[in-house]
Image 1 (tube, rainbow, N blue to C red):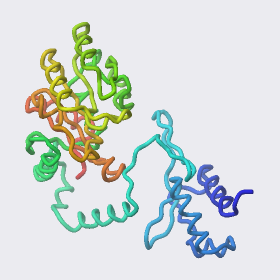
Image 2 (image 1 turned 90 degrees about the vertical axis):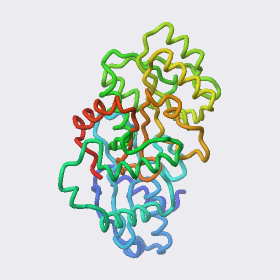
Image 3 (image 1 turned 120 degrees about the horizontal axis):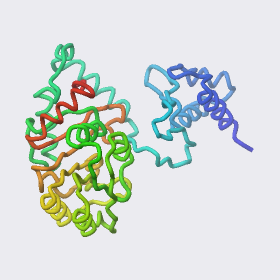
Image 4 (image 1 turned 45 degrees about the horizontal axis):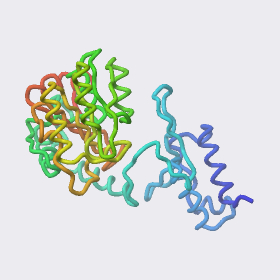
Length: 324
């Protein structure tokens, strides 16, 4: 027989999923729920903890417990749904720290009391403010890149960075090599911009670069999209020799390299980015959704000087500038 608190959890979950409890609704306090349902305060706390683990509510210190927005517009191709607390959901990746929300709240509070907030009343340069680009360049240099603010463009997350790379540097009908199992977000971009994707077979430790060379000899490739440091979904980290070989192939066949570094921060001592092996032809894309918060849509693109104008045009066409 199902425990009583589980029945109450199911009642709340059903009401939220059915739209009877709308996003933003403040739920009864723990003490009020305890009195209403004739249960201990500890059990009431357990009910809300389970609902929060399912992604249905969020608790805010000093304010209460609120129903979360769980719906997505139709047609996004995302199967996002709440799951039971004892189920491991691999659909999406999120930063995960016990006090993550409070850390973010403190950081946002500090931002509101410092810096040039008045500048946010005006349109910003398409690539972002100079001071912000310098800050990001300093951080990127700690990850193994050798870059400066002049090479950095601030974007609305890594997916936006990939989008402007495709919009600014590729054309409909271009052929792009990708790993046989690759990031769905790039596949969605390819479909939208009418790119042809060619699969690179996978080896145990990375893409089969011999196969890639053979593909280049048979097909006129324009670019290669890769995630060399903690690949999604296969998890590999390409070694230095593989990175040098990929850079050599790109130079031999004049390929653009789009390097996705969304998960690179998770590797303690990663090899140097591909951008250090072929800086003249690599667009390096990263973001902060996976390391800080998925709702924090801030990312960075590092590019050669010759690509900057085209990428800035794409930023202007899609978002004008990143709201920092």
